[in-house]
Every structure is written in structure tokens, then in C-alpha cells.
Length: 132
Image (cartoon, rainbow, N blue to C red; front, side, top):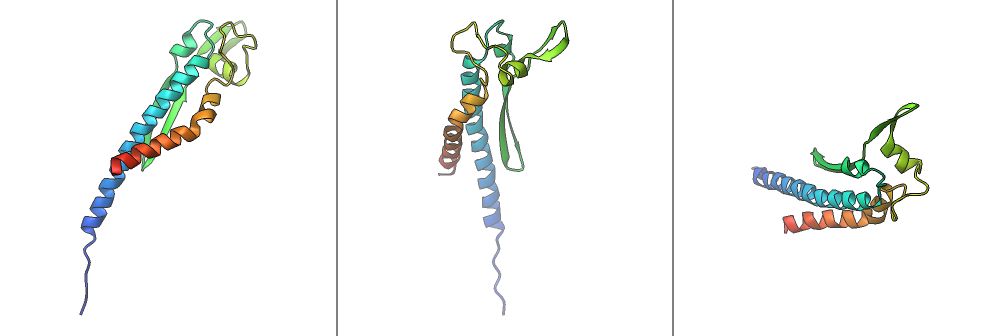
């Protein structure tokens, strides 16, 4: 005598749930990265405006892991060659006396640290909403 239990229906439902969770996480991550991009742009140097214009965000998903990133990339030339203006202003505080009030070094890192918990909560809420 034997008993069988067909788990195909259950595993199919789990797979659908995983896909829904990943899609909701991507949506929530897009919202978080849009917010981080906006907040960091408000703090970025505004000498020529190119730094703020050249910022962007990306959200990717691979094997159920959702990653959000915000980028700043501006390469300039001076008498000593090419240098990464975005890196210099962010990490090295190259603009100690900003010409635009409210701008600061660590313009990306600071809003991320200040809002990381909020972003995680919002992404989790997006997932919960999708799975309810």
C-alpha cells in the first residue's frame, strides 16, 4: 500500500508567487531609486549643471535578487589630463566652498544612508501588497 501526493500544483503556485514578488520588488526598487536620484541631484554640485544631468538609475533582477543603483559619471579634462569629476566632488570634497547653497560632498551617500530603511520598508510594502 502506498500514498502519493502530487506537489505540482503547489510548486507551480510557489513559482508564480516568486515571480509576483520579484516584479513587485522591482517596482518598489524603481520608486526607491527614483527618490534617491531626485534627492541626490538636489545636493550635487551645480557649477555647470552637467553632473546633475548625467546622473541616472538602474534596477536589475537576476535569480530573484533585485538590485537598484544610482550613477554619477562625468569625465573632464584639465591641464593634468582626464579626471572623474563626479568621483572627485563626491568622495574628495573638491568643492569645499560650493557656489550653490545646499550642495555638498557625499551627495549620493548621505541621502542613501538617511533613507535606506525607508526604501527597504517601501519595497517590502510593495511586495506585501502584490501578494495579498
